[in-house]
Length: 301
Image 1 (cartoon, helix red, strand yellow):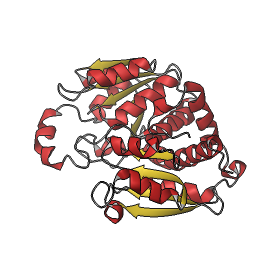
Image 2 (cartoon, helix red, strand yellow; image 1 turned 180 degrees about the vertical axis):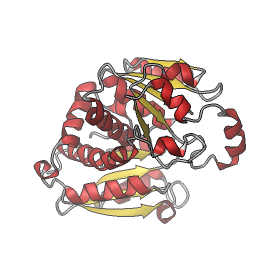
Image 3 (cartoon, helix red, strand yellow; image 1 turned 180 degrees about the horizontal axis):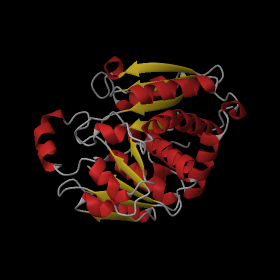
Image 4 (tube, helix red, strand yellow; image 1 turned 90 degrees about the vertical axis):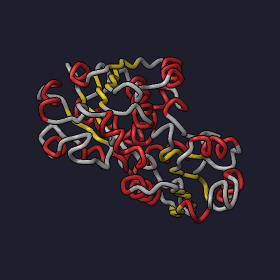
């Protein structure tokens, strides 16, 4: 059974096949989930992820069922394994947005239903696919492009680096000490054939960049660290001055939600180089393409 927990669950050629389906007109993908349910399990709430996933399921003929974390109580009311087995009684795919990546791995290991990662502490593959769709639409291709990520080297950054690297681009990451990729992360990226360049200062990383990308410094579940993180990231806000280092042709991206005046200035979010809304719109294409590919790989038709 094929699952998608992270970009490197795919080969580069398979990522290309997923992207073809993402960029295809919805009506050409058929209705593989017609008369079938898709579980949408959310331990963590999200505006873009919920809306894009549910609409994607509907466009592929299926019925999405939204499930909040408290309804199932992962590893509290029931084990992750028993929840997966229960959901597989009714659904042909499980899409889950969770805190711990290990929960997804345990569900997928059962092979009772395809599991798609809608976000975990280790990866955000559907966001990364939406990101490269945006880059392709704006710049023609990812190959040969330089994508500079400014901020915490987190789950979003890992998936982005894998997707960009698979498609022939280069990822630069500018982070303060203590917020860079771990050796384990770098080993995983290297094993996937992906090279990431690390920078201590954002300005250096932005020189010659085609894409400038950032994300919140305080993710869900990190609220207690807020004050320390804001101090540590001083000087890393993507404002007009910093963006100008990349030049007028560079596009700005953010996976949202954004904290205006923290990791990014409002003038950049709303400025002429910003592509945050096409990027958000591509979350629907990303979800639809992945669900269609998963259906094909697992004989759901």
